[in-house]
Length: 377
Image (cartoon, rainbow, N blue to C red; front, side, top):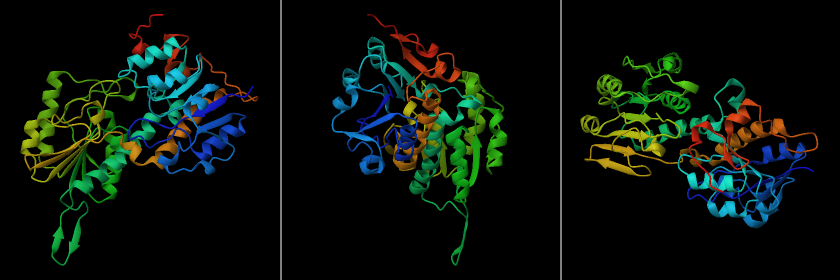
């Protein structure tokens, strides 16, 4: 029997993305999957129900979930949603297990097989499934636009009748997917761009996009393409060199985040106090507390009428059309290889991508990273 895929409305405040788009919905239908979506669920992403050809539109979440075999979400399910979800079904989406142990418990109690998109391994074969990267690229792009909007200077050099205006100096901290996109965007806008990352392996990538790499002599290349956390001595060494550059910047974009852990503090309050009057910090690591000591996640503050510090949350949701399209493709590329000719879902537990993306299954936490969550039955 073909599987029933359910896509609900995202109820997390401020979330505008949807876990499926009309193109991906059609691709699943072509594979024999019965696709269902909650009425109006895609409106916040600027898709109308009538664009989803062949999709069954369901009025209420309770009715949507009732017979679901597979559920796609962007944000983690709430406890109330889990009460409506059938025991033993499969769910894919961001789960944020480090913040939601109660939800992880509940999924184990209901024997829900959960695939956490933040756990997709960073291997070549899984690049097309890597939702962290697809959404981070949006954040990097949008972060620079936020910086340009808040800045008190032009980004490009301009030659005017009143004289020549020098280009803005932009520093991007962190050269992951978000950072590299930020570098490229700032460069396109005409700024002078410098970039910093504790992973020396990123130097060539930064320079290829036109940025000057700030070399502090500290390397923190870690496993899986992520940076490891620095020791106190290393932090002091990198800070001394980096600070000299930060105080000269017009706009700083920070992107240094460690999944599931607090964001490293790279910009101290003392450094902020020495920055140019009118300087701007856009802290894209705000979800983890921020890279700047003064960042207040979800707020924009004016430090001593000197420096603007912007701590945006869920930035990818601010470009909901492309964010939804990219995320839906990530989900399709993850799940479609395991759909049979009859439209049934047969996950391969020995497959590296599935085994590493798996958070819960058969009443247990399967992820080594989050196995500390114990379930009492």
